[in-house]
Length: 337
Length: 179
View (cartoon, rainbow over the protein chains, first blue to last red):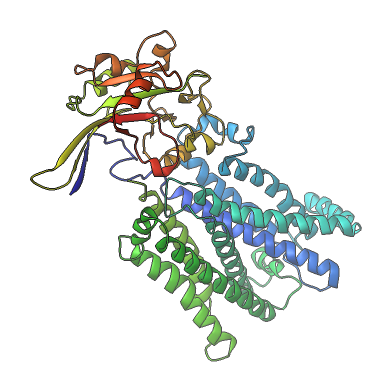
């Protein structure tokens, strides 16, 4: 027998740690998608520059700014001492992943905005004067290929940093055995890439169906893949997504191997998703619905065996969120006791 | 620099929770929360079970993970005695320190900042003992400088079997339990 009775009953701490609710999974999820969008946009800015290939993602950066702002809004809601939030952006603590994240995010915004300026929209419902000015900036940038290349590299590099950061934020907590693995960095990076590719895939589908032939909504969505054939785009995104999902699956397998072959506390932590309270959410939500099903459906679609639908993209997007939700929830419940 | 530490004799502790009440009174700890608490651990089997009663709190670790993960520097090691403290005004309430602490010794004060045991540094700097140590009716709690070989805590740790909590977590806890 080894029985422990404690008089401590601090809110959020006992009986099991639960200091982070829905806000942190949402922040990590949206941050991951933005990271993926930046990498895809950065890659194609560089590729277009080198090969003169007519491939571009003009609205991916704008979408990134919107999603990142929503994610940071969720993070702000989680803070218990909101009035002091400005300190996060005026202090740099070299040993704190959260501090690194806050500074990466400060660099992400200008990189996304610069990438957005490269490809201004065709039409806007208001702000014509501003659009004309942005087009001027865009032309100025396009006259400077090295600057365009720098913007591409910045988006690629910061996207990778942001994607890895969202995993390292959890992986650096030695007190939580389920999280305490550097492999969470690559896991969240590839999950971010797969969800970003799924989002672009979904938008390409919406564009194909069309919302309003002459309206601004259609113009906006058409702009996402302005220079691409939507069918071609769907296929590219499906191939990207299938690659990212396969790598994600391999990383999950490696992470699990690390846990079950680790110390006693890591094995106890692994038990939460290998028969414990989070098992169904992890295997059904993350692995089956979020990875295996989309892989199967996309494979059948690419082979022409079934009709193309938005279902795989929706499943990948849902699976990406469930991954963060399970990891944040289950990881908090693990410890050294 | 001194390394302040606490040594608690589990053979004398009766779990009366006077230390808990003293702490709450001295530090105005909000209702429903505590900075120190009583743990009873029963190990073994009849007829030779072993009961250990412990007064637990922040371990003011030599390598505090709560300090390393703090994005604003609010969690810091105090210049005197290596005591781990929180600057309430600099804390943004991100709760990273709570996730980083293997002892779950911290909590969010209703005012928004991270809260925990301070070893009553405000009393110690005036030459007094922490409130919990000063009220213990069985005199099971001892406080002093671990680096001073003549201190009561150093002598007790040399002369009696003892253990700290979760040594495998590698944080270097400075609250010790005599057995």
